Length: 167
Image (cartoon, rainbow, N blue to C red; front, side):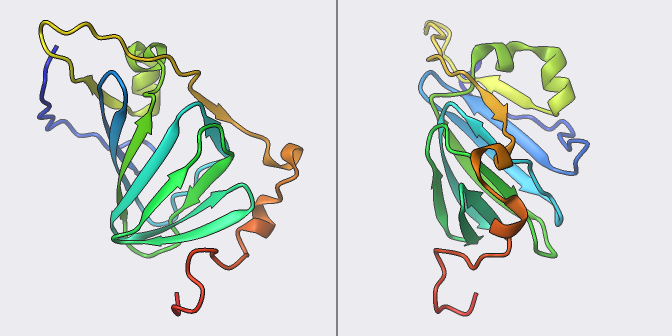
């Protein structure tokens, strides 16, 4: 298995995003470009996620807490928390995201699913290393209303992380 990754393939997904992923035994790292208007559905996953905004800006909603993230900001989504993102800006948003533990092996190794989701993934294990990715139950789309979350109302709230900075 490779210990590095140099992928020059076209990795633009049908929704206009560009998504690359590298996976080790204890975490995964994503580099994602989200075009203006990009909007995920509420979902949860069985891994903690930490994001860094490289350029652009994006709104991320965790439960009923909106966050307006800009270049240079870090943000954490706890494991199994209902969340979603929206690029309300006029330019693409580039993020780096870490997930621990990494997504389940079935998701990473399923070539058909990878093609459907537009995932470009490689495992970064040395030749003599056993690729023992810790288990995770994966990603789940969520009916937020069933959990008492009014997505449209939450998306109109001011960000909890930018009080008084004119954002």
